[in-house]
Image 1 (spheres, helix red, strand yellow):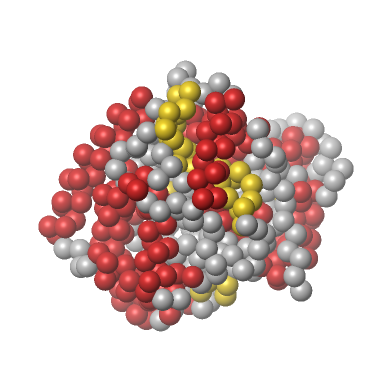
Image 2: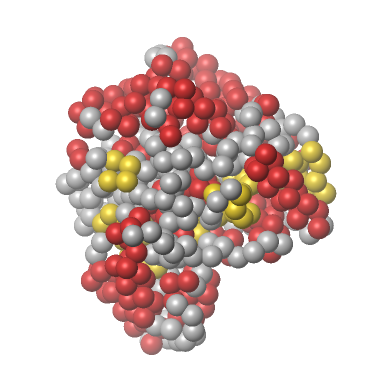
Length: 466
């Protein structure tokens, strides 16, 4: 059998279940891969090999007793350092939280364990999970294993880099403004932002979050195959009453028309030629698979992106301004200053109007997605950015912000979206974004599978620099 760390999660789960591999073998192979590669990319920033091996042995013991360990059945995975994992610090990339050790697992961590997943490490995020780049003063900078000059994305850049380099088969990420979808795009992977309430969330180590995060922040998977996204979703979505937003919705919603809309440049946003080519190619792949694809304008994204920024900044200005000052991370401070300058102070009037407008936009999008169950649009208007591009100047930050229109808009609307890798252009990964109706992730996965099947499998990256 080929190197175990090159296998997908789906392949690993099947091999462990049928005893072709043991969970212990699989875990040791991935721990060795971390030892061999992680120093080059700094994706995994908290390691606990004995704990991982014990979890693997428990999977093997369950199988030897004839029990079902769960759908993940020995699959190695990582957890982002901004969610609670018992016995480990929920740093969120902050020196201020270096010793904030969780006493309980968050629901998503608990669900992954119950499904037989083996956690092999915790992955890096920018300070406050605030950027589409991954660097902080506590853990350092994460490099993209496909091209070290390019961002691995953020804020789940460590998760995506780990999956791309074969350190794990599934990376847990979180997304409030693109933090799953953009790292998947930047590292040449697939990443799913589920509907709000689909995957339960709660950190006992911190107070409950404010309204912006409650309406927009989600956990979700990053993986090398659409099948792995489907498998990890089945594990992550188990009920947990600690999250009052959790919705026990079925994973499939019945038949749907194979009809898609293609919007190459939502709201006239600038889109690079390479991104345009990927979008048209994905549309052609869906047509070949029996979909009807119509190139039309989608409902407005710019107002939704502005709502995202206002809600996000309302939360941050109210609850984290002092922490940003005390942490003194220069990149986080620069980004916060630029966003505050663009949005201004978000007071009661601005917050109430944003929430009112949000309802109007959600209605428009739901009606649109009833007619077109899939929207094909850019993940980003540009190919993955050069490392640290956003903090190089005010103009560079503004350009990055503009290119990320779809990343910012869709969380405010609450619809699920899937970043699908489609290949490479100019030595950088490229892909497309699929958007679907609320709680219809099954439609996204069906369309994503058709695009994936017409392309080539995602390969593990070998960082080839010294």
